[in-house]
Length: 185
Image (cartoon, rainbow, N blue to C red; front, side, top):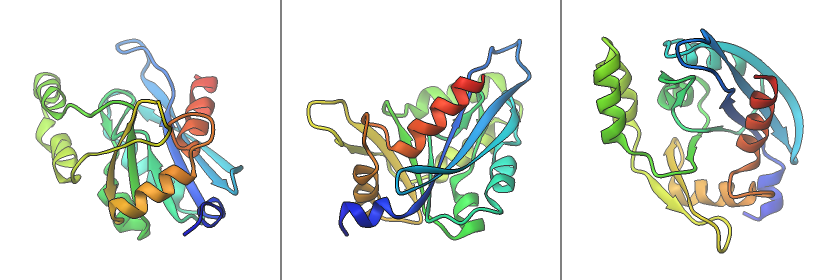
């Protein structure tokens, strides 16, 4: 498929706003629908810092939207409020692409979960069931991004990711969601 085909797709970008651990009780979760590189719709949800409502709130936000794929800026939002990409994929039958600017360090994540959460095993299960982490170079002479996929193979995901990179190495749906979430925080 050509870049123009991917640009016509309706894609969702999800990112959280800033917060102060121990001070802020909730954080913004921005859900942005882009089509042809234009913002079609924005939904804002509040999620608990280090809570367990992020997957539920994302499902709620996505229910009325028509889209082809979901881009998540990682799995943890508002601290360790985990969004389960498998649940999102199974609920909507759409691919989920998890994008990280740095290589995920699941050893450190697991230690932090064990240290701070009684329900750490439940949260850790989400990290475990996501597949392999892929390194993708999207812009020449820039750092790579790291991608995990659910419901789509890496070759297809790589094509979509590369077609949606305009202003930085981060796909536009996530970049726009981040700008909105951080701007409202």
